[in-house]
Structure formats: C-alpha cells, structure tokens
Length: 187
Image (cartoon, rainbow, N blue to C red; front, side, top):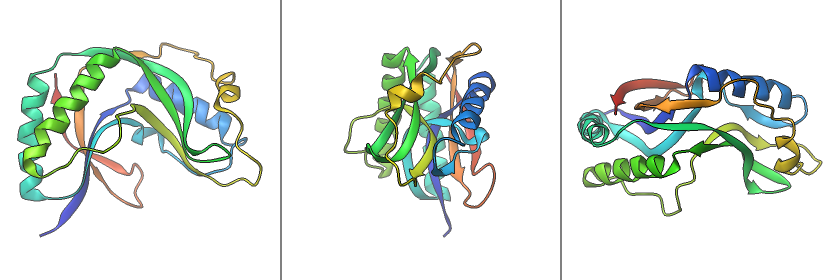
C-alpha cells in the first residue's frame, strides 16, 4: 500500500503571501539560505502526520470535518521574523503570526486530539505557530540577529486575514509547488 507524506495546515492567503514573497526577494541576496520556500507553499503547520496510507487518510479527513465544525473563524496577521536552530547558523528562518492566538492554539489542539485515535502522536515540544520562509543557513559569517532583519520588514499592505479554513496537504518532493491540497475544511 502506498503512503503519502501528509500534514494539516493553514495556507497563507494571497495578500500576506504577496507581502512575504516581497520580503523574501529582499532578503535572498543578503542571507545565504540553501532553500527559500516557494510562495504558494507558505503555510502555518497545525500538525504533521507523516507517511500515511489512503485508508487512514480518509479517516483523517472525517476527523478534520468534525474538528472544523467545532471551530469558528478567527483573525491572524504577520508578526516578527525569527529563527530555529543555532543562532550563528539557523536551520529555519520564519515569520511569526499574531492575532487571535488562543483560537489558533485551540484549533491546533483540537486537530491533534482528533488524530490521536488514528495512531498519530502529538509533538513532544510546545506548539509555536510560524510560517517557514527559508531553510539551512549556509554562510561562513554568523547569521545577523533577527531583530536587525525586522527593521527591513516593512508591512506595505494589510497583513491581517480571517482564518476560516485549514487544509490537508500532501508533500510532492521535487515539484513546485511542493505541497498539494488534498482536502479543505471550513470553520
């Protein structure tokens, strides 16, 4: 039985995605990351499922319909830049999110609880919502503090949006975009 690498996430809508794309264009010549995220792949991960067979994926979809019906739309906006990994050579450059974070955390928890009976285990680290924009810093010189980069991050448009849906993504290696939407769930 074939398995697909799946995860559940909130896709970044067009306006904030456009703002992030412009920011990435500004940062790419200055920061030597090995991989910059393709703009259509920008998202906020809610839970990673990993390699999942078709039968289990169908059960995930049913569980996500229930999780979505128990929620309500909420507002998010782009926040500040940050990194994961060692400060001089981070593994991930990300954009934080702000807004109704209690609602976002509640949705993430509800989704995580919904897939546990299907054999998926929650992460053993706290949930830190973010939008990954680049991976694997590869410069010899130390990475600049994220606070310095934030001064370049000027919001040129409306970065706030209503989050009224989340999606089930399938990873397609060596494709662009790399993430394919298998199902949408409206709150």
